[in-house]
Image (cartoon, rainbow, N blue to C red; front, side):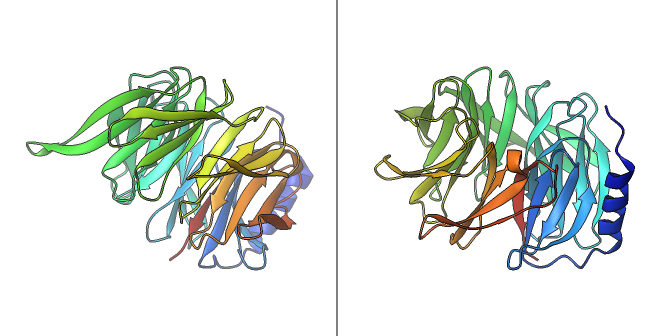
Length: 327
């Protein structure tokens, strides 16, 4: 690995030294190349602080109280997660041991929930106790992304090599929490996915065959597929009102928008080089898309379906995963 330049280190130290307080709400942007978490004011789009992470951070989730951010560090074999105090703007690095290949990350009951590609499972890290516990063993190849239902009763993963999504439901077995799971075949290379707000459908972009796979959550069966006409679909996010599905096409440089009810394409927006991470703010008024190759984040007006602004967390930063934090 190439040693950081003196200029880079000097710039980073300067930014950290002059950091402002974390706003509430705050937009959090991971910078893969720079290995930082940028804390952004979502009104002025000023980067108020940067906090170091592990190598090649990919995904970030926040605790319900908005005080903590959990980051998956995908570099160096994906052997760590960063737990970041958003008030103090300080990181604690956690070694995950044999549960390497950390990528997808979510939050549940104050804990970080993370996917391990190599161990083919989902585990939790409790910042209060410092303990890592295995949660669900998927038995599927390359368990990559993870998300939770709104009530945390269900857990979902995409398994990229197996071509499946796992649906795991939480129950009780005596005094122990037990998870029952089903692997649902969806197509080639499932990666980005999202639940509809009513929790009834899981939309998964299968980049290997250029389709969208829709899983019926209740029956745990594939309900429908349709072509997205994308080169390399990366992320899928559904608006809070359940009307639109946003797909970032990192191969085609576009954001593709679909109507959820009709499954029809609504609009294609040319964004630039390698659009990847997507975040929709809770109000549903705006979406943020990380245009990784251009070191920019595009701000999308979801009513007008137009780009209203672009901002950069820094040159050569490689923005990707994002989250919203509100205390």
